[in-house]
Every structure is written in structure tokens, then in C-alpha cells.
Amino acid sequence: MEGKKKKYLSDLSLLFVAFAWGGGFVVVKDTLDSMTPMYIMAFRFVLATVVVYLALHRWMGKINRNDLLKGSVVGVFLYFAFAFQTVGLQYTTASKQGFLTATYVVMVPLIFMMLYRRIPRIKVFVASFLTLTGIALMVLDGGFTFNIGDLLTLVCAFFFALHIIAIEYYAKNMHVFKLAFIQIGVAAILFVISALALEPMPQEINARTWSAIAYMGVISTFACFTVQTVAQKHTPSSHVSIIMSLEAVFATLLGVLLLNEVFTVDMMVGATLIFVAILIIELWGIKKNNAPSVDRMEKI
Image 1 (cartoon, helix red, strand yellow):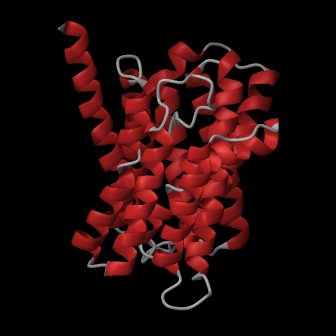
Image 2 (cartoon, rainbow, N blue to C red):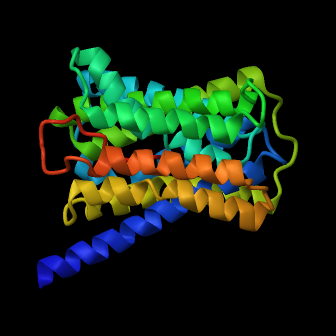
């Protein structure tokens, strides 16, 4: 009974993580009205780097040159993923972006196929077809051109897929907290450089913006990562992936409720197809252990 109780508590805590990450789309969208994309991410990741180090440094141990190299590769992917996501959010809605970002779940096995020259199982082709159909319904808006924000979001999903694969590859021989700290720190440095080089310095930052940055840095990054790390000790990885995919649903609901975003019937059908595709990837053949992992260690 004690084991089951821990599993249920872990699943509930992961539900909180999915909700917090879904809310992150709404928070960033709202903050874009008062601050430019690179500065939002620069403040967010600098804060997250400081908090992660203060909270977890005692378990990291000494960081060597090899650790820095591995963590930097993951950090670069993380930087590009959030850069494209945040810039793209200027031109699309939080509700739409939540589902388009979630397409990384389908991209991961396809990238594995290209990297390792393996023919994916039939579920990958089924999920890919449903995802493409869902994307078309969500973003084409009766025409045959992508909104630039939707296109940037799909690029961001691609980099999140690379980020997941890189984490799985490097985390085998590296402490997860050490890897988390380095990648967040590298992303922070790159965002600071990008902000200083590409965007004007913010002249005034109001209390609402500081609150949003605190939410993104402390809740969406540090707290969610810590909760997920602990939870994964007590619940199956299949539960983790399925629950985490609910962030797209929360992003949609919060976008409609808090930002008054319009969610059309076509978009609803498209979002449903994308969500079904995610469940197919996670649930079809779940007892087999030979498929590439699509679990996300973190969505910082």
C-alpha cells in the first residue's frame, strides 16, 4: 500500500508540473506585452541558474571539462528551443502553441530512426499522420500558408526533440543535477548575449513582469524539474510521459480562460488529433522495452 500511495502522490505531483508548464505559455504570452523575447528568457534562465545551484549544488560534485562539453551541447539545444518558442509566441496564441510544441513527442522516434537507421514501428507512422493532419487544421486557417508564429513553434518542437535525445544520451554517464545546472547555465549565457546584441535594454520593468519572471524561473524551471525528478522514482515512465503531455491541454484551457483566446472547431479537432497522436506514441506497445524513449526529463 505504501508503494501505491507514493505512486498516486507522484502522479498528482506530475499533474501539477503539467499544469505549471501549461501555464507557462500563458505567462510568457502576457509578458511579451511589456518585454522583448530574449530579455524575458535571459532573466528567466539567469534566475533559474542561481536557484538550481543554490538548491542542488551539494549533490552535483565537481564539474570537469567533459561535463561542461556534454552539458553545453544540451544547453545549446535548450537555448534554440526556447528562443524559437518565445519569438514564435509573439505571432500565435498560447493555446495553439501548447499543442504545436507537444509534437516533439512524435518527432523524437522519427529522429531516432534517422540517427540510428532503424525502421520505426507502425505507431510512429500513424501518429505522424494524425499529427500532420492536426497541425493543418490548427494553423492553415483556410489557406495553404503557415502563420510565422506556428512555423517557429514547430522549429522549437524540433529542438525540444533534439534536447530530449541529447539528455537521454549524456545522462547515462552524468549526474542529472549536474547536467541540469550546466544546460540551464549555458542557455542563460546565450540568452544574455542574444538580448544584449539583438534587443534594446528594458527601460522599466513593472511588478507584474517581475512576478512573471519569478514564476518562470522558480516554478516552471526549478520547482517543476525538482518535483519531476523525485516523482520519477516512484511512478512508471509511461505515466510520466502521458501526464506531461497534458500541458498542451492546460495551455489551451488557460489561454482561452485568461487571455480570451479564440479556439475554433477546426482548431479543437486538430488539437484532439495531436493529443491522440501523443497517446498513441506513449501507450501503443507500452510493454515493449526496445523502443526509443520519448520521456522528457524536463521542460525547463
